[in-house]
Length: 82
Image 1 (cartoon, rainbow, N blue to C red):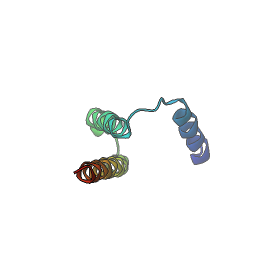
Image 2 (tube, rainbow, N blue to C red):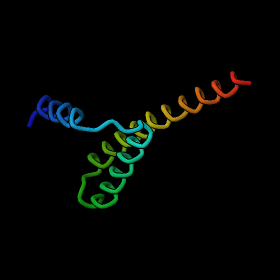
Image 3 (cartoon, rainbow, N blue to C red):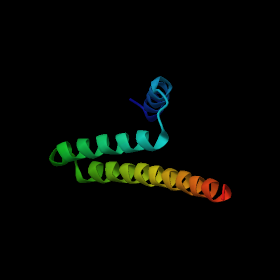
Image 4 (spheres, rainbow, N blue to C red):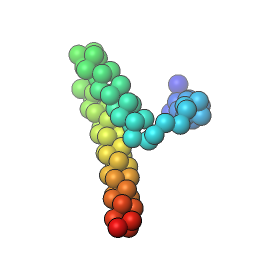
């Protein structure tokens, strides 16, 4: 398959996902990826493992960033009620 075909599969999958709270979606996805990596580490090449770790790092960083932003907004809203 080509990258374009895989991207199209990503788009199709994204369209079938029900909306969940972003933080729980990121958390669930990161946990699934971590489990897959734990189970397949010995079967993956070092390069593939490192690529998947980088992907996990990006997902983790984005999920954490969104969580922090929501926490900041919540705190601002609480402070503005005082």
